[in-house]
Length: 102
Image 1 (cartoon, helix red, strand yellow):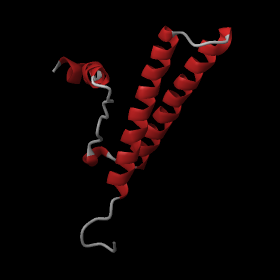
Image 2 (cartoon, rainbow, N blue to C red; image 1 turned 180 degrees about the vertical axis):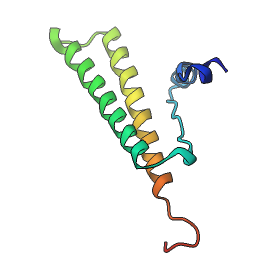
Image 3 (tube, one colour; image 1 turned 90 degrees about the horizontal axis):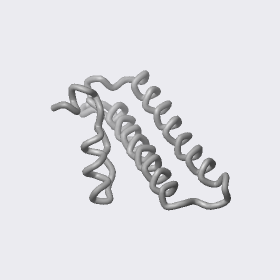
Image 4 (cartoon, rainbow, N blue to C red; image 1 turned 90 degrees about the vertical axis):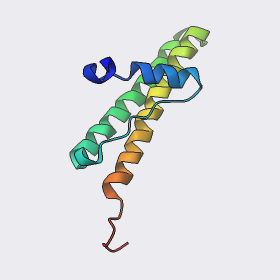
């Protein structure tokens, strides 16, 4: 309940990562439109940039430590979850509707 009130996903992310998975927040089909899809695309790009930045920073000394690897993988997990949610949202938004040409 606290997570919903604060608009965060820390707990589901923690539980999913604990089991080797990733949490993907599914879009509300009632709120999906092209603007929402674009906003999701921007978020995915930003999260990918965080992964690339983490790798670049880790490689400044020529190697990646365990702590740096964990940081990179955590950022990668968030990126992949955002990308998966973006793909699901695109499918939901543009899914053929019953009764229309399919």
